[in-house]
Amino acid sequence: MELTGYNVVVTGGSGGIGSALITGLIQSGATVHNLDLQSPAPSDAKFYKTDLTDENSVKASLSFIKTIDALIVCAGVQLVGADSKIAEVSLDTWQKTIDINMTGAFLSVKHAMPGLIQSGRGSVVLIGSPTGMTMEGAGYTAYGASKAGMMGLSRIIAVDYKEQGVRSNVVVPGTMSTPLIQKIWDDPEKGPDLIRRTPLGRMGKPSDLVGLVNWLVSDQSSFATGAMYAVDGGMTAR
Image (tube, rainbow, N blue to C red; front, side):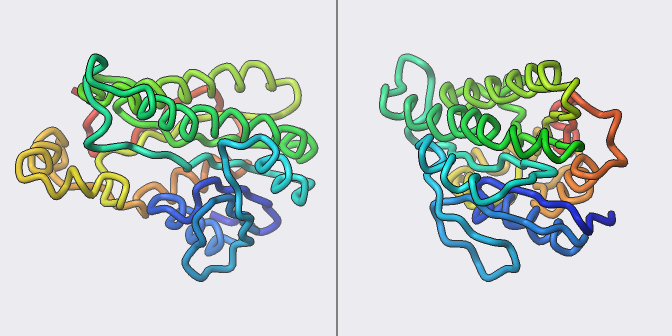
């Protein structure tokens, strides 16, 4: 995918999925801006230390980027061990998850929107989860709810900004080999069970998402908006 001339913002670009997407975007010629609290591994992306739950921090970072051809929202937490059934979830766990996953997405899109409109070909890509769509969310009340909210937000953006040329879509990864869910992989029961519930019989790699995300960034997907695209080994096909 040729993305030379594209200016792309990635939130949470220092994480497992975000860093893989940044690598793929840069390899395709895009100029990439990484908004994250964590310092990234060395890359050619421009890094802006950003608290995605703080409106002033998000606004300040994005003020340096005038034209934004695409915004990819990767930033997220899954508080394995603290998130649970609703009667067992603390308000602190709920609030932290919603603040980073849902409010972080809201603030990122809100303050990137002027740059996306100015681009004339703006594309928003939100990273969703099967937990926001299916019973895979069982036992992860805060995380599943936050992802469902993000995915609903994408549809509203797609409708509200169609006349300004901004599209919005969701990519739904399945079980990925990332630090986010390392505690699940390390569990002798939960790890193998995730593989059993994936028809292709393996965990995904963040690089499995690169081709689809690059396509959604590009003009080749100009008729794609308001949709969800699963890259989950068949998990949501059940």
